[in-house]
Amino acid sequence: MKSRDPITRLVNAFRKLPGIGERTATRLTFFVLHESEELSQELAQALIEVKEQVGLCDRCCNLTDGTQCSICADTRRDGSVICVVERTQDLRAIERTGDFRGHYHVLHGLISPLDGIGPDDIHLRELILRLQQGSEDQQMVEEVIVATSPSVDGEATALYLQRLLQPMAIKVSRIASGVPIGGDLEYTDRVTLARALAQRHEM
Amino acid sequence: MKSRDPITRLVNAFRKLPGIGERTATRLTFFVLHESEELSQELAQALIEVKEQVGLCDRCCNLTDGTQCSICADTRRDGSVICVVERTQDLRAIERTGDFRGHYHVLHGLISPLDGIGPDDIHLRELILRLQQGSEDQQMVEEVIVATSPSVDGEATALYLQRLLQPMAIKVSRIASGVPIGGDLEYTDRVTLARALAQRHEM
Image 1 (cartoon, rainbow over the protein chains, first blue to last red):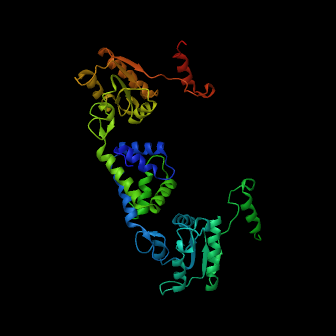
Image 2: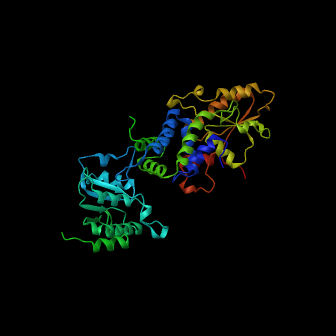
Image 3: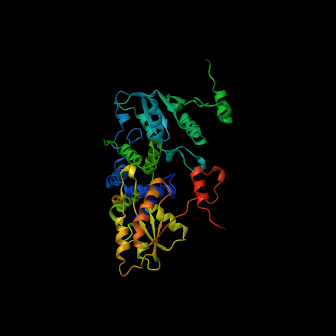
């Protein structure tokens, strides 16, 4: 039900955002009311434009306001490695490390049998096409790094990808799991610690 | 500087809201990106409409989308008592108690000599006019309750109001300060406790 009162309408709209309850929504609404009209105009315009202009990159399914994202368009990047991630946020997290100069593929989801999400429900087909085609402007892909999170669905997706890519003679690797840097063994959960032990490497 | 990228633009716009840092702004942006267009349209429209439609009540300076707020328009309310508050949020807090059936006056600020805010910078003039005029549709005002917060500026404003209204033969009262209900004496600050002792009343 839409409220007649514009203040209540804005409070209700803010409340639909994640992590924003009635108190915060009210605080934000009164902030907007007391600030300049410019601020609310800017936010309103950004909200509309982000939905109008942002779509998926033709090649890697990253979010972009063009047909191809800035990473795919960057010729200095290494086209022989593709890092597969669940979400654009994960891509941005890896970019922030500054340690990866290859390309990406964003699945926008994970295979989750329990939730009824199968391989056709995420952007896997685009990845396969990309690996099969190998058009002239693209380097041959030599390695696919599966950087989905080490959760049940993330592992299931990684396993599916590994089996799928096996016949294509492409190296498939998985990001390491273990105790986080600066983490405390005492407070590391059992499963992570077991994984860290199992995946130990010679020094 | 305005970013060319619509995602960064929305992140930056969210960051201008209070209590929203880069992480939350990014989370909200990706939420908006993945949700339906309806959600972002609704929020954008509410943001624009709230600035277009909401103004001050002609009589009490409460925020309203008409010329008079719903409290002033309510003939069942007691016009002989006016509760003076700093902000609309304070009015709403008092309304939530359900214990006050009089009228309000919203100052939209407090006198603050340190910040260079004097009596003419807040909506005090409207209150004086209101008390002096006493038009036919309004009851004679018998009491003004000063419900500004018990801070330095709130007390200064209360004192100013008391002196201002003294010659008008209107009773001026101040909300009580003391230990909050459910509060613990051990953890109550010194000033509040001293006030609670000084303003003790016979049982």
